[in-house]
Image (cartoon, rainbow, N blue to C red; front, side, top):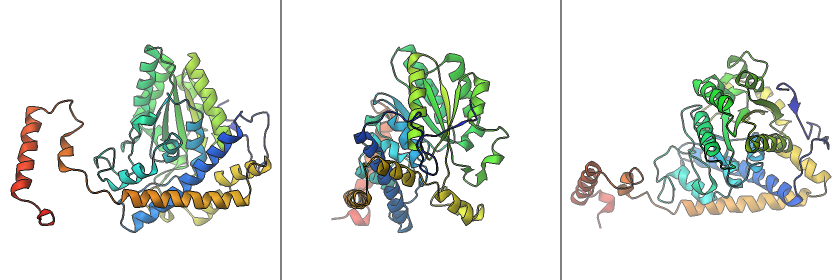
Amino acid sequence: MALELMQVISEKGLVNHKQEPSISDQDLLKLYRTMVLTRQFDDRMMKLQRQGRIGFYLQSLGEEAAHIGAAFALQPQDWIYPSYREPGAAFLRGFPLTKYVSQLIGNANDPIQGRQMPVHFSYREGNFTSVSSPVGTQIPQAVGTAWAAKLLKDPVVVLAFFGEGATSEGDFHVGLNFAGVFKTPAILFCRNNHYAISVPLERQTASESIAIKAKAYGITGVRVDGNDVLAVVKATREAAERGRKGDGATLIEAVTYRRGAHSSSDDPRMYRTDQEVENQTLLDPIARFRKYLEGKKLWNSQSDAELEEEVKSQIIAAVEAAEKFGNPPIESMFEDVFAELTPELKDQQEYLLDHRKRYPRTSEVK
């Protein structure tokens, strides 16, 4: 059960209609558009980083089907605890592009007011929590949120994204053990992209798969083709249904591949070959899904060209809008910590504002 790879669309484009999830034509196109938007956005942001216009970036190149398909399978009230590579899940829930670019810059339009690292965004309106740098900490947090939903009898499931490297962390054991014991409505979604920065999968585990680990915790384990967006939708929908019915948590292993670098600070040529990456390019999730849509007469080359231009325009407009904002006001560093400032923080704030008044920076002198 935990070893069989769930597929709807094979690598050659063949469709298993018995496994095909029910999705409207409109939503199929929404899925595809979000995948294309995510890839183009990733490409443009990496170029901005190389130009020095943002400081840091992480791509999800080749992994779009895994996180977008999983997010699509949820309900709006469900919560998402992201890892590093799930921008498409936020876009699917309505996260504005300008807000995301602003977060990468850390400007006054950034909802986090420049307090987080770039690419560590959050989207409260979409029940999308903040990305966190420490590996795996989101797993027990998500399970705890799912436990709270169960205690409140709230029909909510909670999805946590993480990479296969996080399964080597204690947080993985803690989270899955608690989820198993208390039957929390949690979906533990492992994007097995085969590399934790430079450490390959075989150095992370001796198990036959990640999904088989679910058996030890008494929860359901599923192994799915992470480059097949329809298979991911099906697996995540079924996991959400189990959670809502009170049947407990599910560990999903989505087998995919990180085609890009770990981050804008990484050079993957130091630990893998170009041929390895080229072989994985042939399994591209967007190309596979596009072939499926073409077979259903929902898409063609003209549609694709029009979408490429539409998405390109949206991204350019978002960047132009975001770069017009200045820095966050300095007093914002005292906000969002307590409902009311403590006496100590008030003293610090007054001191800082007085200091800046008496010693303005040259660029601020009028």
